[in-house]
Image (tube, rainbow, N blue to C red; front, side, top):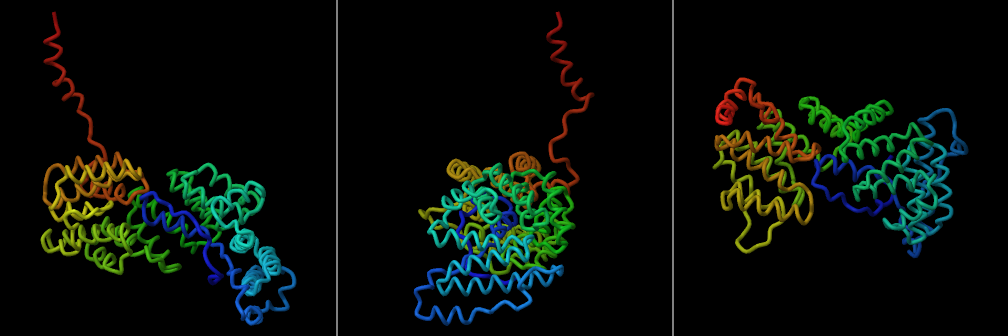
Length: 416
């Protein structure tokens, strides 16, 4: 189904998680809000007249799910035209009819709920939350409220919302995708695996579920499987963030040339675009050396210019600040935003140490593994580097023999 109207305003998810996860969470709300403000336009009647009329066969749902979905789409497009002409009551009725034709596709009930809130000037996080409390059985409101819960990292509320929807509409793909997104964000990977399997059973081409499964596969060390999932998701539903997810995963597979090429596509603005530059530099440095790869970092921070995270990592790789200054930046940023910047700093320090063949790389990678949330790219990167070296993720303890030798002098000294 094509885009109908504009997106529901939502709070951004401000956790520096895996960029894939953040994109999946934002995409989970696929409600459309029609332009009710267009009712005052002089061509309102023309807008309404141009709205496609649903076919005559769309009088009532049939046994053919594909035909029912086609009718639901036609009804939703007609509803959009009605709302643009200012006939919101008619539009709400059409969205409700669309939902009856395809109740497992939550976009239609979300569109109805969003329009209802928009016409009441309540299409805000507070308005959505209040409306959901007043009508807890409304699937459209519950899904919108769940997204707000994700943005706030209020996992309990978000899961309660989604579970109410699933209890009434167990085949609703979007609800299972949202539930899996919440579980990955918590993170609760064991539960997420179950939810992702349910989503893929409903639709094996679910791009959201494939991207989420890619996170789990990356986390477990199945990096090739993760890359396959990300590439399949990009084929089914391309996203602007895909080159970063694919490129950074190719880096973990030691496909440095492919990684650099993927990450060379148009990058978003900072801070996300800065991460693209960091990973592309690390890939190129493996191929061409540090000096030649440094151009991929772009310019550093001019003296006296404020810089936000992860900008200081660029300066660190350029050599204009040292690890002590980098960690100071990370600690201050983490104190302000609480987004695990210190673990990120340790990962990028480890990569620099590895590129410069310093012995402290292993310890820094292990520190990043201990500190980073499991849904961070930096966690995935640190675990992949240690596995590639054939090393355990944590330092092994002393052997019994070594422990006995170490304790012998102390025992002798303490003897009477």
